Length: 166
View 1: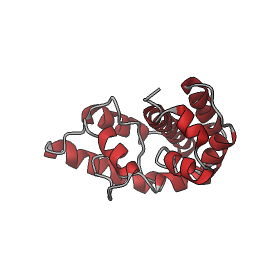
View 2 (view 1 turned 120 degrees about the vertical axis):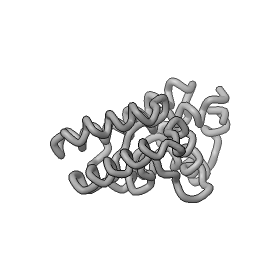
View 3 (view 1 turned 90 degrees about the vertical axis):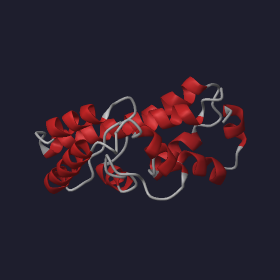
């Protein structure tokens, strides 16, 4: 989408475009309140700054929208499409990898009480599995911080893609 088009959209339509980036209302509201943006760098900087203010409960709600690594998002919505593309390097036909990710996801969820989140774009399945195993050694506080950072990276990639027509 062209940034000028986004700047001119009614609030509800613009919010609907941002929601697949992350379902955190305070972030969406902050980005919308900063319109109009002069250029793509401005909107990316605003999105990054707004993401620094996320609260743990907001991140927890946003995680509910993400599928497990190695699983496909349900539905046909924009967020499901983005997730599927981001996880495309995870070879679903590799049964050993799929089982290792499933086992790792289960251990992670038992330890941390949330879905394992990682910026999958640019990583293959083995790299994701290695990161999962490493992060299982984190303390809950360390993992909370790492999860927030991974979510920020995902959001920045999605925001860049949204305004890739500039």
